[in-house]
Image (tube, rainbow, N blue to C red):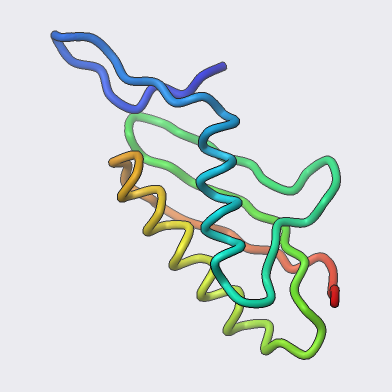
Length: 101
């Protein structure tokens, strides 16, 4: 299902799940030492009435300060979704699942 971001009298604007995932992935990768975890469940997005909630599973570089990296990821993902999609971001829940190099 393609999430609809905006509906009004002139029509609607929808963004494919893959495009939303790319926005999130690029925002995550802009944080030093962070990347989306590889595997089945690495990213979940819920969009309801122009409000979005994201759940991310991360791999973080060994030696990084985990809370700092997680907080920066939350900030960058929320900012990217707000700026590019015009949605209200209710939450970006981050789970660090792996340490990498």
